[in-house]
Length: 114
Length: 111
Picture 1 (cartoon, one colour):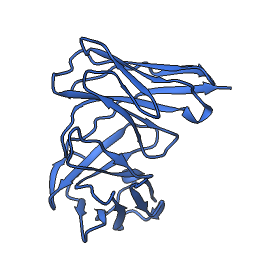
Picture 2 (cartoon, chains in turn orange, brown):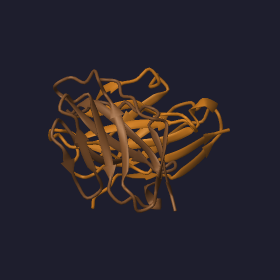
Picture 3 (cartoon, rainbow over the protein chains, first blue to last red):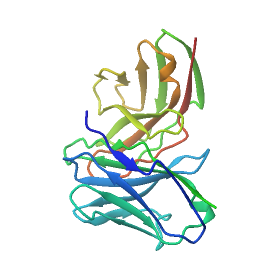
């Protein structure tokens, strides 16, 4: 069964460094999403992406964040200058254009900013 | 998206049916009820969704009341691997629409 994959599974970085989190969505999906979950807190929406542009973004998704679909298979989340509070699990999700639309999630990347 | 209310925690014996309730009294006519679960810190896993009819798949059954103001997710024969946080989410089911997760119900399956 096709699934969303994410790399790396764990990332440790120093405050102020740039990180890129990678996702390979399910192959025939056209909508892509990033969510994050700070330890012990709710899963929070960051951004949705369709047709090579951002469809919606949350207040969390400020100028330090960007997303890109550099080729036909990858979907990336870049954090330009990481802060301690960016430490969280980051989940990628994808969905088809069918109705009703259903999002499928990847296993996540655990980001730790020191 | 309509707000949902779920009990914070529930227990169920292994092998029994687990019935997880969800209230969504402000649901609109074009909003679906979705259920996801999260096992430990893994990615949320899609379980099932429905609009107004009861639905069943290989994982669970979804019972939606006739007025659509509440629903129940049923895991017919719960196993220890079903221990997870279960989220009931009400939303319009078209692309690029975010999922809004609440606190969910922490279901513990006991041996």
